[in-house]
Image (tube, rainbow, N blue to C red):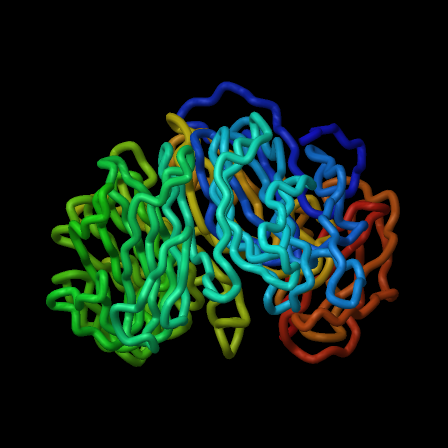
Length: 600
């Protein structure tokens, strides 16, 4: 890839800038870098880490000429697609692709990769599957006739009929610019690739099909259980030799399940984490003691030679946990939120809960898979655990919760800053809490509330007293970071904050640390009644006002023209508008600032 500096002041997708590094102590937290991601397409909410690199994946990207320059740090050369004629001879371009952004600690976004597939398939058939990258190779799975990696077609058509398609599974040494391994599952087998990962020379691939039989890499696979069940296989392939070493079947008897994580852990064993409905089987044999027909998770621990070493499940009468993360040592983090759930099990642990409340849930399974535990956080209004990870070198676990109105965590009670302003608390401000636990599930410090109107998904410890915070702003038409346009009200704004200092000092001061990068207006009174006058106050003289607008939660705009500009404030007369939440946007020249305005 060619990496160039761009002098453009305004960005379309990502803006990152570097604050001056200054020496700081653990008692004096300081923001080192802030980077921003803005995108209408689907963005994975989990960072993939490889050393000091973190990958952020845009699941869907279109060949739009206006969207090629992504950032001031990175200039995208172009989104190059491989074009082929369809059955009528018309050349088509791919309309589904992935952009993988590479964030490096201390430097920000330093590179990108682009995967596209061009073919004569219908839009429903085109699919970019899973992706894995380290510092020398990339492994990917793409459902297509053709696949391009950064504009180059690495995977040519291997079937004579271009109407044929299937899943390409490919390993590319992008340092040497060469294909190391490639295979293709034929269209007749209707194989999807749910997930893949690489460990050394080993490529692990999870395939799924609802066919009675299928072929994969020259081997015929007959079904060994009811063909109406949801059957998956895990395959181990040596990508250097191209030899498939073994395949194993795992399945459920209800046709709904999803593999959520796949990882080779420190002891060399492979762990599969799947969101399952129904009883699970291994190579066609029911797993002893597993008779769960309802929702939950199933975890398989597999030896390098394909032997099932251990199995643990979570189950309830509905969904239960929503997300899962496998730690490098083999421990498991489970989190989410669920309503109408009278009980939840995790291995031998059972938790009784109030079925009338929506409850945030955080579960932990130690590396030996013994003595798991669950924490539940009931609240009258929606509560969910966004993330949990074994973040600290001392093995402290962090549960990250978002809540409205009020919540209680292990005896500590929290309320939102805007409690009581709204008939429905969900109309108000989302707040986040961090709760830290030891390996036995005991709080190691009083939980901390963050009154940010954002979702904090992950915190990564990247060095001693050095952390990466990954969060998502609520959906606004204008970002509070930099005040730049996002595009539409429904766009999300994802932010990475690199911060130095003691973690709990950082969290306790996160508002103050982040506020210099927020272009939020100081408005009073707020809340205010319609037709009343408000004052927008600034710390310095305002040279000019280009426009003032209100926007509704549905994205509609109301231009405001009845205002008086003074040296460092604006007197603004509100129109007669219904009560509710609005966003006030003030454009000063080319700089935009905004805040949330509550109309009583």
